[in-house]
Length: 173
Image (tube, rainbow, N blue to C red):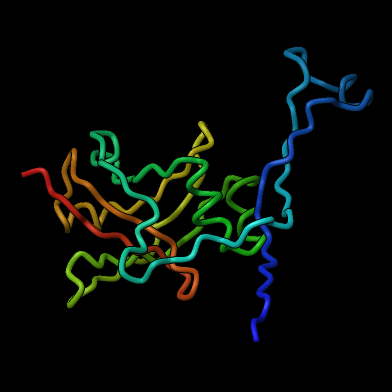
């Protein structure tokens, strides 16, 4: 006997309003109408990505000079929506994606799996950038781990525990 498994998940996406109503056009600043966007949840047609417990690192990247200097890991827009915001509730997603607020997060450095290190507090947060990418600010982790330009890291949002996990794969010595 086989059973059918149905995945009903909600995915977050931007909805842009490019066509203003007449009242919005008339009250627009002299520079013209600026489009509005809002975050909406849509029923997803496919199941969310399943984390492989042996290799859960959904976002992999090589650190740049700017990321190391500022202590902020840039996470592309698409990766944020597919691998992070998908697992957040709508209110929290709206808080960061539309309102542009910082969201305090917890980050676990699991490079040394036997002694993972937890980072949390005012200097550990996630936020949107003007270019609509996102950044994970974790200056203390970068300083403690002595991360450098061209270091290769893995990162993922753990939906079961509600925190980020980060791991250094390769260090440019």
